[in-house]
Length: 340
Image (tube, rainbow, N blue to C red; front, side, top):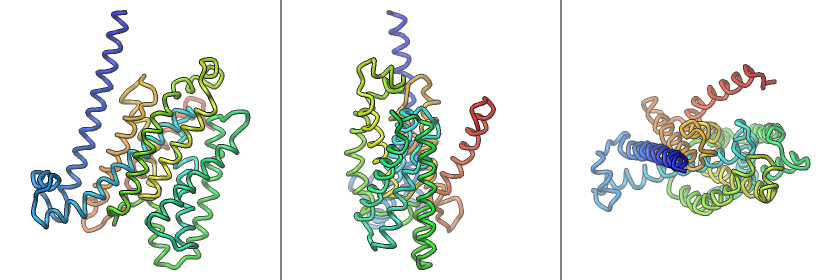
């Protein structure tokens, strides 16, 4: 018993230390993004402005220009990271992330059609993007169902549906006006350029609802990771529990996509990074959300300052990070005999 207690205490200390370190990285990236730019604001002035002080110029730069974008980056990264962690843990497949299995493509297709065909924008556009993600997730789940859902089958079905939806997006864009197509292409890359408070509040409202629901639904995750038969033997409600988690993870990905576009590879990379920091601690949902938040914050900072005078879409930077990881994962799978 004493040895078991020591193991548990070490696990708690490891979890707390990793969580604290990730939170410190997020806060550092948050402060750096608010302070640095064409108009440099000292950190002391940033803190004073956030607490109600500062002059009018500093308030405009920090509160109106930078703060909504930084908060949006934080929430988008956290939603993608948490969503990816649920998908990968539940389906026990490192390829099972919303941008791989078609959920982000569904949100993108709905947003493009809403813009080009219906002429919608703002909250209505975000709502349709979220609806597109949910409908795509439902279609993938139903088509992958064969007396249960296997992770590899859901991934393959999702890739097929995502490819078809990407073709729809490409066709619509070829019919669009050049100016409209340019704006849509920027959004489809995943971008935080020009984001304001009007983009942040719907995301915050959705996240306040979905994050607690996801964490509550994930209480059944340890049992489901043992397999359907074992989970049923332990008394877990297998299909309702799996469906609740998939619905929450899909909604989180759709919400983040609606706010910033399909920012690539955040949901794909964040969970394995978190699990490597906390080996043997299960799905590491909250650490995955923190890794996602830090990744998008740092990627957006790099996108703004990597090339002087040019603001890149944040999705370009995250893809530069995620694409090599995907290639490494596929190469590693082939080396150990699990590839095709």
